[in-house]
Length: 436
Ligand SMILES: Nc1ncnc2c1ncn2[C@@H]1O[C@H](COP(=O)(O)OP(=O)(O)OP(=O)(O)O)[C@@H](O)[C@H]1O
Image (cartoon, rainbow, N blue to C red):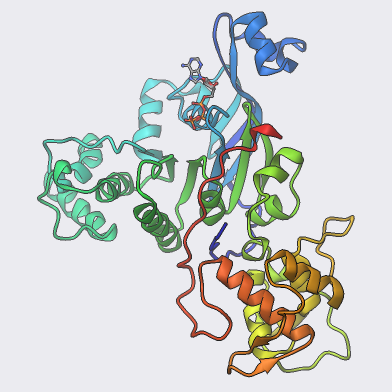
């Protein structure tokens, strides 16, 4: 599995945009009784179905979506993702629980207020684009503004701005049938952005796209988010997409959120065996940060050598350490806050954790074993450094691990020229943790 996760700042507990508390959605006869009944509400999905004929698509879910974050709802098919996100704007009526947007009770909104919510405050981008086939690209993008009552000249001007923003300049006059799937999705994205909503809700928007176009669109979302800082809620069943896009991920199973955390938390401290199995194939060095992997600075540490940022993924430090043949200093605002050397780095790659869940350092022997696990044997742990010189010993193990890690990311070996970051191929979706 290969993966490139963009470097993120550690999320801070910001102001919630959406606040969800004890939310239930039950489909079926007399659905209302299920959440309130202590016996029914704790039945397994199969037992609930056979006893009542009901399906609890969302079961007692609570979370906040913070201002400016990309909040990913992830889970396998049928886990309740779409139902949950549709409940946020009452495209599906919740059965029980509270939902607030900027403190305002969504369940208490009347029809007019709900319309306003969906048109102005929380726009949805669907998988099937929902474009009007007889309208041009420009008019499709302007459509949301038209509904809002914006005048023709202004809406065309704003639509043109967003057509350009999603990279479709020159295609304004085409109709949807004259566009590729990826381009159509860009039109859908531009249309949602043009109404300037506070939150964008994405319902598996890229799952119908082929892998390369999908990756382009993911990068587009990352770019737009970086430029605009807009709050986004993103549904996906694809773990790689979740790790790439999410500041935080809510992982759902059978209507419940089984874990809510940053990609790093989910990968390095899975809440249970189900999550552990889900993230088993994720290359940890692309998700675990240097802040988590580092050890305290000791008086023996050199004051020079390579520097890495605390938020940098361990893969970046592996490369730096392999190139320099020396430990890397973790620098935060000009201050050295820790050190990552071969032991810490290999601890991450080999997925060695201490009882408190932190990464344990790996000594030279187990380091060699770890590299063997990655397909590089201890005997072959003699590698070329950045200048092509042969390096031996523990540092050669680091270099070998760097090779293995970089190769796993679809990248170059340690002796090759650097390539652009953030361009590795995303992993194939993992779809079968059901057997856990
Ligand atoms: N209108 C409905 N009536 C009855 N059951 C429903 C209805 N809509 C959804 N469900 C059930 O609720 C559960 C959750 O469905 P939902 O569509 O939210 O899952 P999902 O995780 O979004 O799946 P997918 O990834 O396949 O879209 C499923 O068991 C589904 O069969």
